[in-house]
Image (cartoon, rainbow, N blue to C red; front, side, top):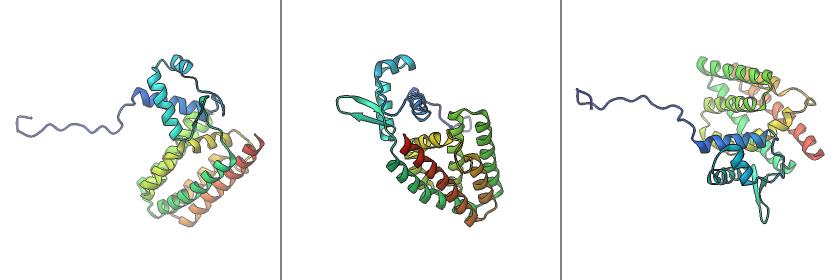
Length: 228
């Protein structure tokens, strides 16, 4: 209590510090998404413990968490492996993304404000900077942040929770499609068009920009995954 008898005011913690478990999950997720662990590769506890400097309990909990995200499979008699990424799974993910992202982009465009426009432009700049640096991890995180702002601006919080459950597999697909130069249009160019359409408040243009981006990525993923 203060001298006036009122409880002391404490500053809100906007971003709680990461726990050790959070850090391990992030590192293993990024290793799978970036391809450092190949599809079908076994995830052996002892080497992972040694590399990360953590206990088997933390590694096991992380593997269970990544299994829930669809990045890891547990095979009887073999244990955890990096999940295979099939075209059929990818097709379903792109179909779900189209429903969620077109709805979010059109609503975000209708809700446009100067503050929201500035936030979206800033996130696009961060994405472009990450692409220029050529490091996959920051690039994928910047892309996720770009979409978070769109969903938040749309007021589609439940839809964003659904998208987050798929985020590991979505990021894995992004890593696959970003690694090729054979796309009809580079991903960052699509993002720039999406940003411009939403910021202009043009819901139809925003929907079209999202559809073109996902169509391009979907066709690229289909070709690459069927060739694998």
